[in-house]
Amino acid sequence: MAETAVETLLAKGLDTLALDQSKQPQLMQYFELLLKWNRAYNLTATKTPSEVVIRHLLDSLSVVPHIPEGSLCDVGTGGGFPGIPLAIYFPHKRIDLVDSNGKKTRFLAQVKAKLELTNVCIHEMRVEACELASTVDGIISRAFADLSDMCCSTRHMLSPNGCWYAMKSQHTESELARLPEWVHLRQRIQLNVPGLGENRELLVLSLNGNH
Figure 1 (tube, one colour):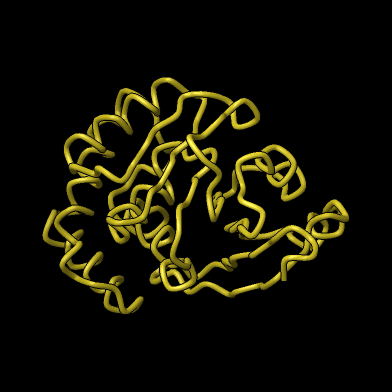
Figure 2 (cartoon, rainbow, N blue to C red):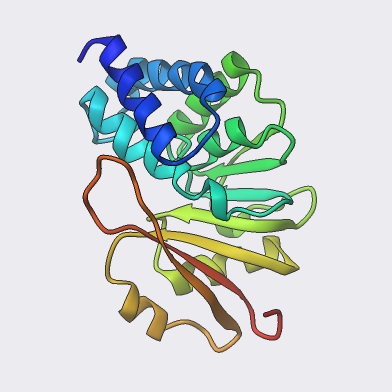
């Protein structure tokens, strides 16, 4: 796919999501770095340029309207999804990226430098062992783990009034049934990912008593 076709696909997706088109150059920089590093580092199994745009960039950006103000931590971020696209769209929001894979965190460090994302902090460690400078207002993940595991392994990083944001595609009913009693499901939001044609939803969870 020619670069102009990729840019057109991304622009149309941003338009569908009603997002600021001025962020497209940074998103394209990220896209190009991802394709370059993916050949050696296997950052994602998605190989074709169009799929990368739809399944990673637009999928990540589909949650933008639903993320409130405050700090955010992306756990199990991998190649930076959804954390890097969100950092591009929220330049004044502190965003921590956590992943235990050294190759992936080295890639993220390169992205941070090239895109001058001063709001991003990268942590190469397991989520359970991660100690942030301070607790965060939101913890987000995209297909990182079972909901119960996500909440249990990251509870120490979440502020008392904060929320978990779990991006899911399927099997959420059984996961919701296994949630600890101290976790409350606040909201289920159906996401529209331009060009995808698959089910996506955002589950918003909080500590019981904070809803």
